[in-house]
Length: 638
Image 1 (tube, rainbow, N blue to C red):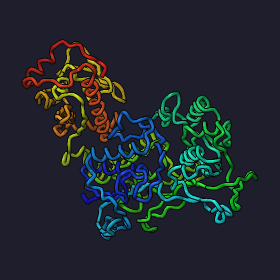
Image 2 (cartoon, rainbow, N blue to C red):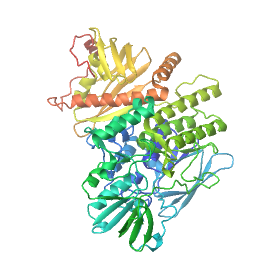
Image 3 (cartoon, rainbow, N blue to C red):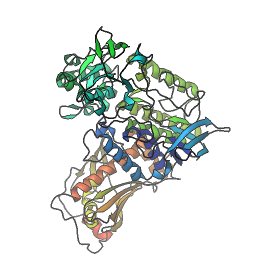
């Protein structure tokens, strides 16, 4: 497989790196800065990031974390840029692909190569050294919040304005606006944050809004607001019903935006990207911030508005969005017009084989999870697990997508790439299934998980307890159901416990019965414990390692390489029927393993449990299996 080039190491580029690294697909990533993180690296030396000192995420931690790597439990619901940057560093180091990223390296040109693939030219920003390399495919993940868009056309008289004018991209701290009269133009998240923040130090801050909109609080009923969003609401419930429900919740929690001096929205809820802010409405309600309509023209130090009013202004901050641009691509390859980019399911360029885009969307939701899902699809295509339809079919999908946007959203450069979180995830699952069928049809053979480059799934966690203590927990076969990664909750059926017992598991799709038939293959106290499930050919177990700090690094392993053809076929059929595909089944198992380890950690670190156990003699497999027949009271709810 030819190497893949990934451009950018922010939210989206890192997701692509992790997925390709996990799949064993060789790649090189290029990052203009000296660290990962993009906009979340405050004062990033890549010269393109727009983060300001008070920046926090506006989707909750639960929605924003990568599904392959959760955020720390001690993080707040809405972490700031420092915490997010640290999380991204940990993410890279956890999966171990930092060496594949070329830092301080700017991609200057990407062009189709003769005979196929792509020629990529990159320049080191410190030494000026240029490299030219050939890649089979290119993943563009350079983001779309780095090329600021000023008002188009410029307001009359703006060139003669005596105060300062900047784009919000360059705003960092409010200090320089102390005692000044400030005008912020825009009604997005950044405009709201900057208007509120400058109003705490300025003589007066005005927020100029061209069209009205809706404001979503970050918290509703004591919980993050996006907890109210679910797959059922966004995928099953009719949009008019969604509007009615959300409008009712907004009325109960914040009232009407017009009560705070904001203009009446000229469109329906969800027909424009909402503003997410916990502080805008209270600040308006306290009188610390004033609302103005759109600017009419400038005259010296005075700004005139469309309602005939005017104000003397010292500083103007334009929060007027960004251009979607790719300076390393020739216009013959990709030339966005008013942020309009024609991509099949927002990822694939139908005109150029091997050119993919990750994170090039404006989500009602979080970027991370969607970028992960996009990257999984790209990896399918790179490995031949999925295929693309004809160019004509791809064009038809793009046309349908644009028609839907035009019907739903108000006309704006902001709404050319809009996606809804859960519906778009479902869309990507669907296109991966269809792509798998196309690949299967093209190969003329059954689609099975590739075992040529197969690597067992592994998830690790650190536990503040000695390996012997942890081993005693995981080797207790009477609690097998509790430690099953496929269970959300597991219950024993009958009096028998452990090996060969029957239990009911409730996963995310409903109740599934297992009648286990297992043999214990490894049993070394404080070091390892593993089962072989003969009914489906799966081996699963644990490795324990001392971490040098009195604790344990516990790794759970799930290995299906021992499955025969019939077992693989049944597993793939189950995955397709219950979870929408084998990759989804794998992701479900990975998530289950993570939750299992968290349960083990919670129990091992429970108050009263000794943190350091004296190692006993090694316990034999026979003794462990015999323990399965003892009548032991267990916590049946995992």
